[in-house]
Image 1 (cartoon, rainbow, N blue to C red):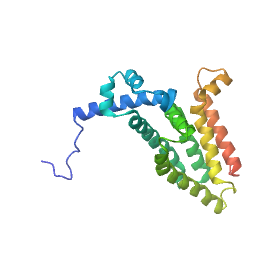
Image 2 (cartoon, helix red, strand yellow):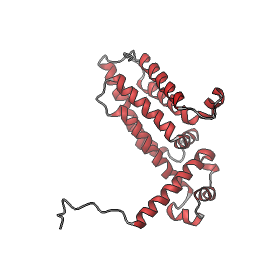
Image 3 (cartoon, helix red, strand yellow):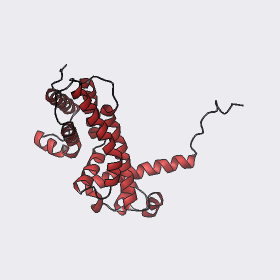
Image 4 (cartoon, helix red, strand yellow):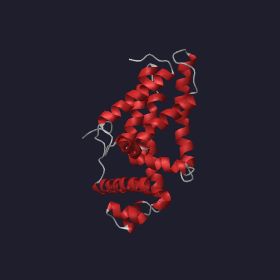
Length: 218
């Protein structure tokens, strides 16, 4: 008989796994619908139909549209904060840390375009449904990012610029590859942005940021 210290962790029950799968299925479709229609334009009926469940079944998991919307944004915010962590907690030299930061931000836009658009629409609407959560979760991470940049500047490792506005510029540039991808595709005459386009975007943004901070370029 295994001791408490060596016993294998309990595995989720079949019922728990089924519940988790259903919640994720609903969240995936809700993220797409909110990205396309915004909070006001979306409805529980549309999301339920997309998810292939009844309205009553969806409401069993999420009691109303607002709770589902906030759950979608919770998930989006968690993924986005992981990308910001590349600059908040790092022992890398400035150039390497910024490369990792920009890569993480573009990865988020490429992998979660609908999530990025849901967040963008919430912000454009004045953050009326999710403002408190943004202040509680995003603002502390932003302050850590700013502190990292300012520590480099104070140490003479990077040129003096506004850390806040440099971060805002990086956000705007990287999120554009999700929020305004249709515009880019239209201008470039493409049905979708390719991996080659993404590589060029990464290299261009990294060069712009490094030159702004007067960092050595590889």
